[in-house]
Amino acid sequence: MNDKVNTIQLWRKKEQALQSIYLITIEMSKAISKEDTRRVDRLLLRRQNLMEQVDSVERRLSEKKTIGCDELDLINESIRQVGKKIQSIDDCNKKLVLTKHDEYKKSLRVLGKQKQGMKAYIMTTRQVDGMYFDTKK
Image (cartoon, rainbow, N blue to C red; front, side):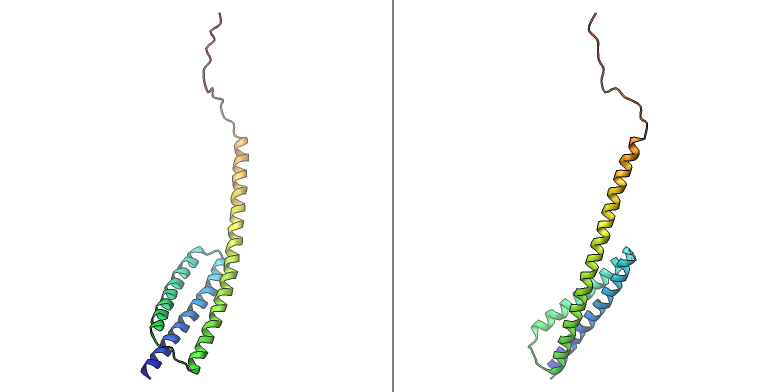
């Protein structure tokens, strides 16, 4: 009985960590839209810590015997739903980041071309690359 309670607590802990990951993923989406890279970095670190907690819980759960009960079925279904939500938001975030990346690449190319164009208008003094000695008399 005590083992069953402990297992259910571990599943609940995993569910709570995944809910936190879901909320952080939503916040990351907003930060990406606002191009707030510092906030995205902080959120990624928090999310990574939570993912490590989930991994730790899963290792502990793998050591336990499988038990069947309705409460665990509900928790598992909740975990699956949250996982799907996280994955869909992550896919949207990835697309958003890739489009921003492409925009930055294009603007860098334009800046490079503008820089080359400006160099054409800069007057430079002619320098002789070498000397020629006239040996004819």
